[in-house]
Image (cartoon, one colour):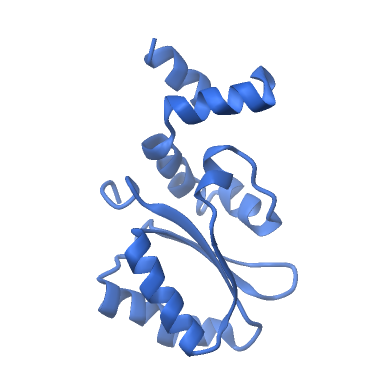
Length: 148
């Protein structure tokens, strides 16, 4: 888990409503493992949103994300996909299911590790400038103190 969460993107994929649990287990996850040499241990979060659609957040290198998106589009199973790295790093998450993943016991540690490895002084100072001191998280403050 240590290496993959540094210099990666957090990428959200929302799948069409279908028997997606089976489709994800039988097609998408095997594609990740076999084609992209992906180890899912701690590198993804999966949750069903309020509409019953499966949402995955993957922590992958951009070229692997591109390959997965092409596969999903060819299979016509994807509703939405986008990089949510900045949303997470700037603590500006507007997608409800993503916020639930970040706060969950099951997946919270993955997001925390992503933050610890990708949050920079520049991001924190930009956040401070745009949103004020009240916007800073405990991790933001810790990094600022350490970088003095």
